[in-house]
Image (tube, rainbow, N blue to C red; front, top):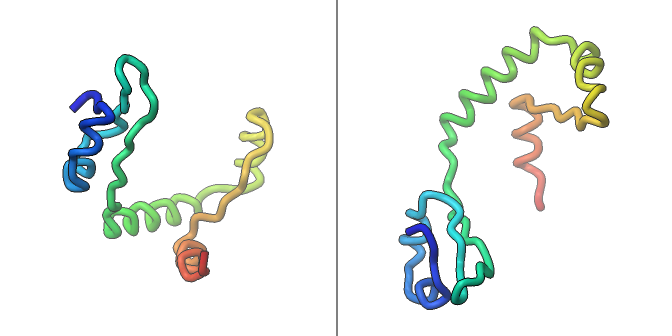
Length: 94
């Protein structure tokens, strides 16, 4: 499904929306009036593996050197993506 019309949108199920491959334009006649983006559930095991690998790689880096190298791009938000910080963030209420 490359494009949805307003009428299509009224008739499709949540399951059909979830099966969309990515952002899909919603049109009224010839005019694009929105974009439907299906939300996908992430794989917790894969995310955990990526976080562990990132943490291992981060231990080999010098934060001051990273800051120096990134300075040419302007202000950079130094986010701590350690597993402990992610767990702490997930435990906080919204």
